[in-house]
Amino acid sequence: MDITKNQFDEVISICRKLFIEKLKDYSPSWRILRPESVTDQIYIKANRIRSFEIKKESKIDENVFSEFIAIVNYGIIGLIQLELGYAETVDLSVEEAIKQYDKHMNIAKELMYAKNHDYDEAWRLMRVSSYTDLILMKIYRTKEIENNSGKTLVSEGVDANYQDMINYALFGLIKLHFGE
Image (tube, rainbow, N blue to C red; front, side, top):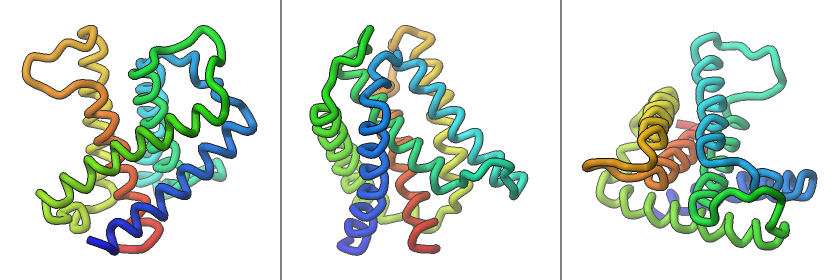
C-alpha cells in the first residue's frame, strides 16, 4: 500500500502543479462555470481519450496522459463549484483556489484509500481503456442527476460521481506514468 500511496502522491503532484500554473495564467476564471458545464468539460476530455484509444492517433499535440490530468483537475473544480456554488465573477484568489483544490483532493484521496482497501487494488488489473469507459459512464450518470435537479432515489450524488471520476483518472495516470 505504501507504493500505491507514493504513486498517488506523485501523479497528484503532477496534476496540482498544472492546476497552479493555469491559475497563474488565467486566475480561477472557472468560478463562473455552473456544475453542468464542468460535467460537460469532463465529458469532452473523456470522449477525447476514448477517441485516442480507438483511433490510435491524435492530430493535436495532446495525449491520454494530459487529458486524464484535465479530468482530475476539472473533477476538483466540479467539487469546489458544488460546495461554493458558481459565481458571476472571479471571486477567489489564487491562494484560496489552491486551498480549495488541496481540500477536495485530500477528500478524494481518502475515499480512494478506503475503496482501495476494500477492493484490494483490483484497479491494477484493469485496462486503462476501462477507466475511460467508467469515467464516461459516471459522466452520463452525473448528467442524469443534474437533469433531475440533483434528486436521486437510491444513488449517490454528483459529488460522489466527481470523486470516482477523479480516482479513475488517477488510476490511469499511475498506469501510464509507472507502467502496467
